Image 1 (cartoon, rainbow, N blue to C red):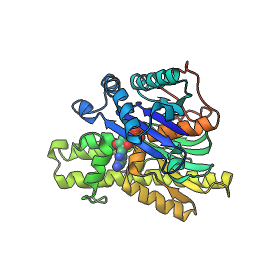
Image 2: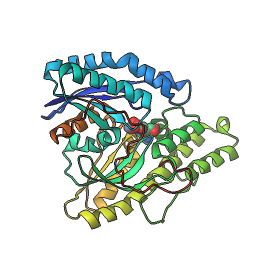
Image 3: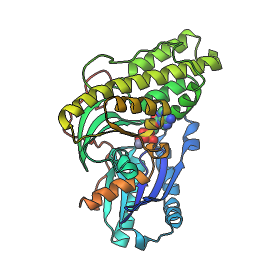
Length: 355
Ligand code: KG4
Ligand code: ZN
């Protein structure tokens, strides 16, 4: 079985072809729109949608050529159906529906977050149930992944996502966009102990996250030192290292609480801690989570960095798993700007809650 997967929910146009037999990824192309958005200092939804439209069909043809297959070899078309920037999602969904209709193939509308969640099964065949820390630009959640389409959320952010905190922090430090990789690079030369930054919610029960207080503390530190332009290279390195350490500590502390719950409810079947989403590319975080998992006798899986950030392979794989489970979608599927993995989870409460 081979699935073509399309990802267009944010600022990456991505197409991949993934099969059941290893090596599973036959082709995976990611076209970043970085230069298109850089001059605005962030992602502009309308610009993103137009860029997806301009490049997607060509990218799909190139993926087929790279995998050395034709449409006749494809068994299903998967596209991100949400959540995300709706203009871009519509572009991907429309191409997938058109091909599905023309070639009489199953269409799979994949939840982008399920794509991130199931990547550890694409790479490492992780068995259900597993504990997942999903950390990206728009999401920061702890979930028990019980099966395909079956998620139980243990915690979420009450304000910003971890990736957002990296991105806003980088902007404050004059490091540009996207912030995560820039902070990681600058932090390599920095001292994480020079500027003490808070660990929000530390010591509080539960698995929710908060990052807005940390962002404010960073801003205050920068302002006290005379603003972004007054920072020396050493200051930027030290502040980056402090921010990375504070975000990492918070993620680890909240994950510790989640491991306790996971053990209580799923011992001994649940044996894996998985991290996914763009922030999972961060090396310091991967190392800290690996130690945490070992301490709690869990196997740890972090997909390779290029499969942590947005890509088409994760969508193709989630589509493949869904097709095998008999979960193909109808062609009247409507793209969803919001699409929680666990619709039964209570709304997070706190300052600046986004739902
Ligand atoms: O999963 P993703 O590619 O897109 C979303 O679905 O949001 O995640 C993007 C986020 C951005 O906030 C980016 O700054 C962050 O992941 N990120 C990182 C690193 N690489 C990407 N954060 C920390 N360290 C990294 N190396
Ligand atoms: Zn993502």
